[in-house]
Image (cartoon, rainbow, N blue to C red; front, side, top):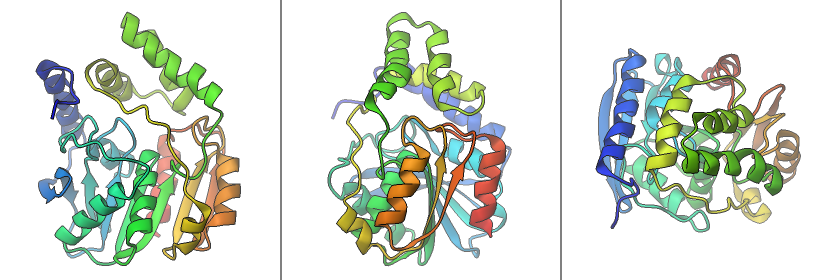
Length: 284
């Protein structure tokens, strides 16, 4: 199988940024590898193994250190497993799974079984939300509850807005290598300025084969079969997955929806204060 990284040098530079982000967190952690039928899956684990388990699932074009930074205090109450999602610019296998079938659900449930986890909490951002909902569809027996921040797979935004505000700036950067287009891309998605995201994504856009497959939405009948408690955080100014539209559909299709919160003045990616509020909700 050909690599999703466009060159060995590009891969090395992206993974150097991965390691630099992890080092900057100044945390005690261990690296774990789980073999699944879909390929090797890398984890960063931290916190007391005797504590309840939570698996963090990052978003598209992301990695485990970003998830750990986003919810930096969970390890005080939980045994935290931050996963490197397959086929993303990180240290897991480059096997690209389909969003249309139950592959992501099978993959995550294999991980849960291999780690021998019971009554585990799943918390995911954006594309990580799709993975978590696919997991519940496949087999929710070992999952206690889930927390979804601006999750994919419930609603989609206006495709024309996404093209002009996300796709075109990305493509212009890839053509010109002018960093201003990365900043424009991020300004449409991020509630705050993130220097690491600028540096990381400017490498990823040039050196990694990204997945531009349209994101599906969950079938209402499948959503009604889910019994695991769900908490959703939607963003008011999210052009990818609009917040009010998301909450309206979630209220209608998820009988196990425990709570939904609309984050005011938030774009797709939350700021530090909003992430701390989400973290407090998980810890509560």
